[in-house]
Image (cartoon, rainbow, N blue to C red; front, side):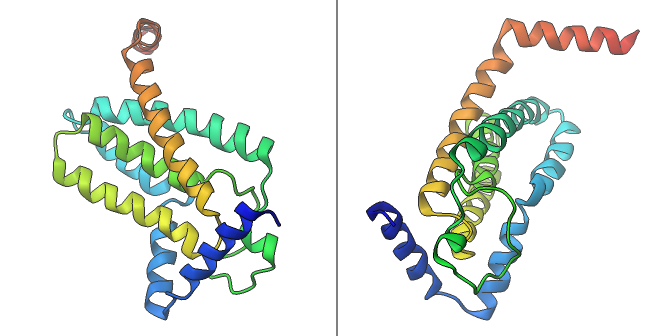
Length: 189
């Protein structure tokens, strides 16, 4: 085990000292918000029905597509980092073993993508703060549950922010607007 990995395992072990039955239940619940992006997709459906949030929903959708490509297809597969519980033989898991690789945290990337769009484009500071707290709790839950290294979560958050900024640029581009007009035109036929 290299120095950085050892340091990250020490951080995860320190977080384990916080464990209580109530916090265990809370972290399992919080992390489940990111499972399959169901929570985020549910919010997207609500946003698409709101005139004030439709543009944000479109941008988040673009960022989620970018997340699938960058996080789930490119990085997780190419980096191939094993999860920390596998690396050290941690057996006190509160959730089932996961089938994909550790780096980067997809839960964190999707959460930070969503929040970044709200912070940049949203009109409600309260909603942005509320969703920001949820995103941070989801990121922390991945450490608490011993399924990600701190660097997985940190990089996941950074990727989420970057991909949302890229999604905004794509949304504003002439190419995307032409693509969107063509889809609407074909749908009306």
